[in-house]
Length: 296
Image (cartoon, rainbow, N blue to C red):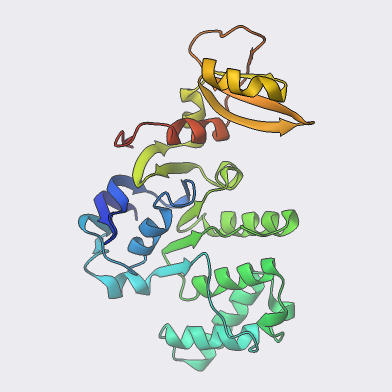
């Protein structure tokens, strides 16, 4: 089963073009949707999840027309939005049981077995009787994935799932998502480059509502091979460097700006060539001029 998006567009009433003719194909496995805040990622996720309408275009999931057959989509969809509400004083087990009932799992024994299996899978079984208000951020995210997995979905959407998690919780979450992605389509929407690099074999970059790249992270890095140069400079040199070179990014390392530039030729002036990484790809793609859309 594949998720196929074709020329999807959405413009809000205030004139913001959230999606502009987005076309992409998402196969089974972990698929990263990368972009800065406000790029259009959440609009795309909500549209796929049948929570809002598109102005034009199509989305198909296997034989299902996502924009027209919303009930059929919801039966095989798991969704973890960036912020999700829970009843804080209810235990994890009781709330999962309630959500399973709402999803149409009416047989008590079947529901009990499913909830227990989910609690084991997200490593919350030992905390199943604890009120969710007492959960850590990572535990709440694992609960969120747990409720999304009820009913064995064929499509799982997670929106900014690791924001605010400490490194240990992020790693545990990575492992859980990777395991899930072996059998279903998992769309990971994030602005964190590292999430995509570590989890996803395929990815897309969206900026200003447009698709700027679709393919593998490795292929994206290969596009910039031999074109990325870096140099550590004094802070006083930063403005002249920005005026004279095509600067992708700067970050402070030991109190000094480390500058990455893009150039087909050796720029000299103390710059050294480095292997590009996904962060270089990200900055290069979001710098493309408006309405220059990359196709898969």
